[in-house]
Length: 104
Image (cartoon, rainbow, N blue to C red; front, side, top):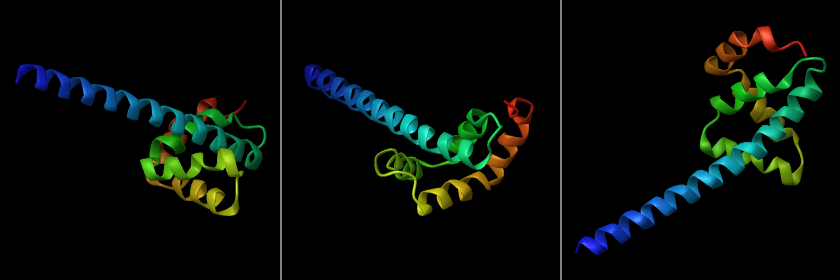
C-alpha cells in the first residue's frame, strides 16, 4: 500500500512538473506576442513592463490563445484580446505602477 502511495505521489509530482513546464512555455510565447503588439502600437516605450502586466492579468485560457499567435501571427482577434486584457483594472493599475520604467 505504501509503495502505491509513493508511486501515486511521484506520478502527481511529474504531472505537476510537466504542467508547470507547459505553462512556462505558453507564457513565454504569449509574452513574445504581447511584447510585439505593445512595441508596434506604442513605439518608444519600454514594452516589457506593459507586457508583464498584461500577461499577469490574463487567465490560462487567454494565455494559450495569445500564445497561438506566435505560430499563426498576430491577427485582429488576438490584438483585440490583448487590448481588452490591458484595459482591465488590475492591468491598468500594474501599468500605472510601472510607469517610471516605460520610457525606453
